[in-house]
Length: 203
Image (cartoon, rainbow, N blue to C red):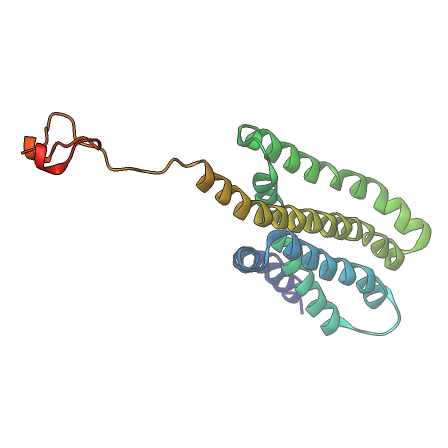
């Protein structure tokens, strides 16, 4: 049917709308680096296997459509989290705008070699294997996210260990609070008594 490809493309693209919302909620609960890791792992795995299914022998239209839908869902899920991660790992918040701009510029720039070199590679080795080579990008991304997650866990653990020590040091440095007489108010004469005078002399 002539309308099927258009409907499939529309469904694939519109799935990103839901995936961004779901990804934000999951990242707030489980962490942004783990979410990016699993999103790239799923999308990368589908990228590797979809080529032989699409261009190989036999008809796998239903399976390909389902995998493509999952691929589009997971592919868009991690994109907003990259920018959020950049804003959270910066030590100096004054560089946030520059860092996010650089991150987005690099993200769009790395797509250019794919558009340039994928057609010649497809002509040389075939479309199914050319798509499989695209799995190298998610593989490198998963390695980076795993490393970042370990660093964030280590930093969080160090902060937890330092917090009780800092609280104890602040309590030790805090001077003991003693009640002081309010200025402008003078105690009655019969209550003013020196430590060296007996009580009966001060009346």
